[in-house]
Image (cartoon, rainbow, N blue to C red; front, side, top):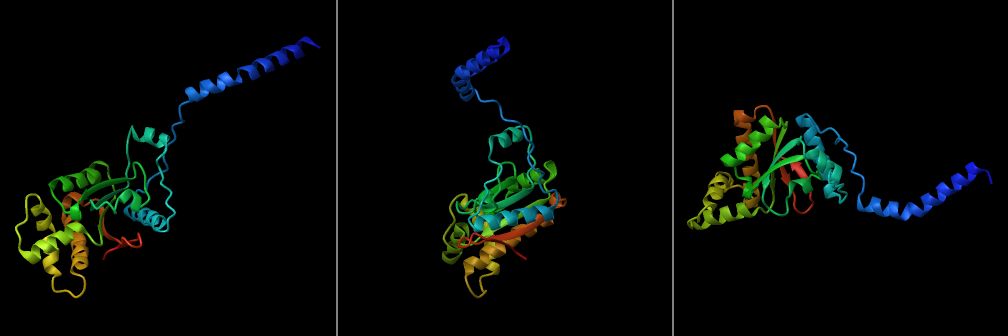
Length: 230
């Protein structure tokens, strides 16, 4: 056998023998993941709203993609973030914006209070997103069967004193409740929708958010669908 062929066989035998060790070492110390840049986010309010509604259609149909959860994404976001929408929502456990809109890490800036009631901290948080992160869209997301609305209506019906910090919620929701009190149909539903629009209009009227589009939407707990409010 020629010497060069013997050398080749010896090298192959050595490689085969070493393969388990190499595999074990690779498993114990996997190579670092390649840093890949996330796909570009929507940069206009119209594109941002379209992305949210498309994600919601996936969620409602049971075809959520759960995007942007991979390790490489986390590493990219460790350096910077570029969310494309601010969602002002309710703390209700059934209405998490990232799931409802099928978005992932770094996609949304969410602020949530009971009944999406505004206060200075919420307004400051929205302004941070609009002014500092240059987010083009603010979406106020209301929903049916809101517990904060139901509690407000009960206090208004009974005239009972509102304890502690709950007064902030009742004071925030009461104007919509009083305005819709004589409307036909479900008072709670009318109140929740009117309050969502009222919050949107308050944000729209604030010059601090003039650079962003502000919209209101309604989440149906039964269907999982989101619809824009006029």
